[in-house]
Length: 75
Image (cartoon, rainbow, N blue to C red):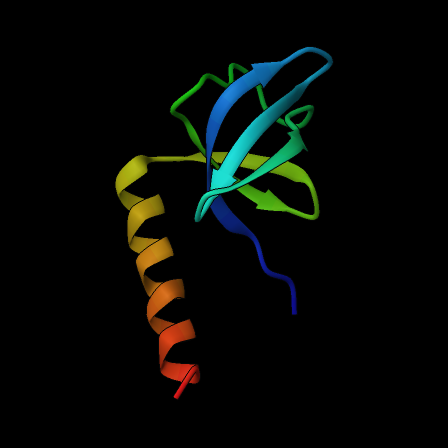
């Protein structure tokens, strides 16, 4: 099973790279597979690569479901 998660782009870096955050964790990822990435965009991240952009509402809905599933498994 593969898992790709939405992350928010905080800064666009040189060489098709960007810094993103997820739950306060900062990570540097490759944006080589998509065009026109800007700070504030949400992208789908899989093994260090942004695969596509996603609208903010869908990203927030997906992240809420992931958090809900994680909390359900914590008990």
